[in-house]
Length: 193
Image (cartoon, rainbow, N blue to C red; front, side, top):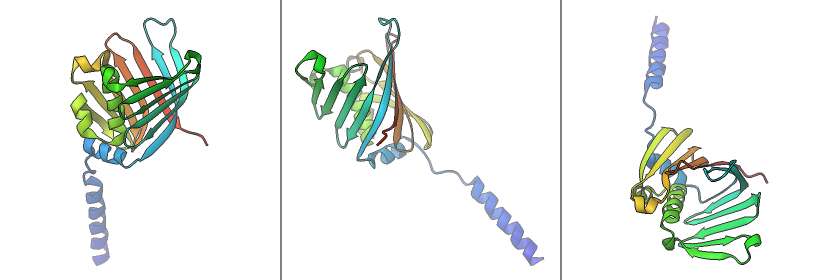
């Protein structure tokens, strides 16, 4: 009889464990996971759907992030171009256009908000994200979508919404919807050695 009671008690404990609520998952928990990644590199495919283009434009290359604020986007197809952003400085090197061009992010308000949104997400900096965007998170740790809606029209420029999707501390997709109806979708995958 005592063995039967122990069995029932064990089943009761097992059921209680299954019913225990999962750890909460919100923007703070996602940002904490992302903040733990010092650098990341991935291959990307970017598809731009624009009203002025007859067909979508597809770009391929690599994207690299290094903490705290360095981004490098290297396009390898259909043309060659390297864009580096570090701090407030942006350099664009396209051999077909001649010498590299250098800009200040402060002189490009729409680009500043977009870059800060991506860098702040990768750095796990929720305060900076919330300064530029209304932030909402859907999903669970293994499949999440972070939605960013620009707070100020003047800073957002044409951007209506940015959606970043991923798994754990890994960004896998970025979608940017413009107010004009244009759309950019970037899919990220692990870089092959």
